[in-house]
Length: 313
Image (cartoon, rainbow, N blue to C red; front, side, top):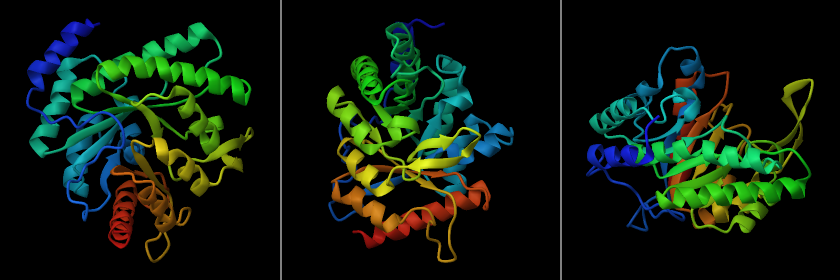
């Protein structure tokens, strides 16, 4: 295990000269107000089937994003390089591929590191500390953000209090490295926009925010069949509630009609909510459908985003 000081020292040597965007708030990406209010990024989860099937690996992702889809900003998922957070040789190779292909690293989505809203103080603290290595890895890779989950078991109020504590602790650590910590609506209480916005109010830190996901508002699922959602929060209401704290947006898509519109979400309506919030940042493609191939789904989502982007100027 690498000592943190050595780890960050190597960062300064290897990544000197790489551009790092401002860390906090809704980043202002465009100096010209006439330009689109968002830039398209690609979430690695869009290719999870290929990754799990070993048809590609994490190192291939940034190159594929640029060459296959013409996207220059990427969002990683820690599941696909889980044991590499402190492996500088591996991270250097990933950085090299990004640099060689003109790709910018934006964020790392972090799962499987414990519940930041666990009611047990010791378990919650352990979950916080488990995320430190991903804060460091994000810094090393030139990312500005990690995405975490505000999970926990208990009453709505108790989990909110615990999640606010866990996020505050992690946010304090991440702030030292100028890294944002953002929470996605990712099932359970977190898919309730009013609950998650309430947690953000409790945390009240400039580097802790949200990642509204257009298609992830299922609060309860059938215990016999996880694929069946038995209670869903209104996605437009939830997005509106989360946007004041948003430091990124996840454009989830599954199926498309013959005109190229997303069948689950009215992209014109939901992106109008995003625009009206004053957001300027990255909207990440996250295709999860099964009727199209992953590559076709990514391209369909990109085409829809570009179309709506032009019409919402």
